Amino acid sequence: MATEDMQGSHGKLISRSVAMQNAVRQFIQDRKEDNIGLIVFGSKAYPFAPLSADHHVLLQRVNDLRPAMAGPQTSIGDAIGSTIKMYNSLASEGDESTDNERMVVLLTDGKDTASTLPPDVALRLARREHMIIHTIALAGGNQESINLPLLQKIARETGGTYHEVNGSEDSLQEVYQAINQLTPRKMKKTGWSYRQPLFMWPLGVALVGFGVMTFCLWSGRAKK
Image 1 (spheres, rainbow, N blue to C red):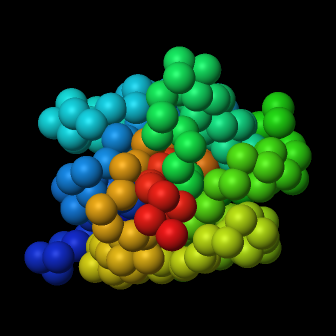
Image 2 (cartoon, rainbow, N blue to C red; image 1 turned 180 degrees about the vertical axis):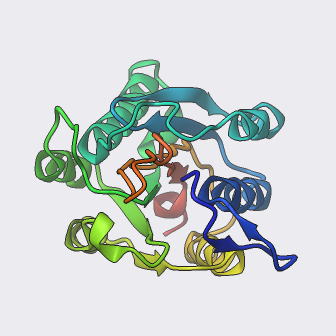
């Protein structure tokens, strides 16, 4: 995530983490009605911001994201598991929003190398919780560094969409805009989770040890 291989909006190369932060900020600002929580993951996965409608605080937490902050490996399965745990903790507190549908955005630039909870098991749990997971592979021209079939499977089996981003900040922004448009308006959402898998580059520099997963709840069922 620290690698500067993304074409910025002003023509200069920027790091993947900066491109990601810019796209996530815009996504948050577009979802004004949503409660959002943030989960980071690398070698570990853990909540970085609790579920909240306070987007000012959430945006500050996005600003605080740094490459390798969660360790030098990748734990996609644990990231999904942490998101489920975040949702279940909300449900245990009697929050009515947990009766709504849930949406997750999972962004990664690496393969799962450190999960305690195997990704396939996490996927089954996510399906049981009726979560829709949209996946984003931030390949940067190095697709071999990412388990694309796994991300495709996660999206397909949860009813989400799969996306690849290879070179520009604008293309990443467009992906988030597309996901935003797919998610109904006038909904009450709960949860933001960010996840970025880590892997080693040929130069031996570990990329960002976190990722982004967007976890949202909306009241689509109630309107049917």
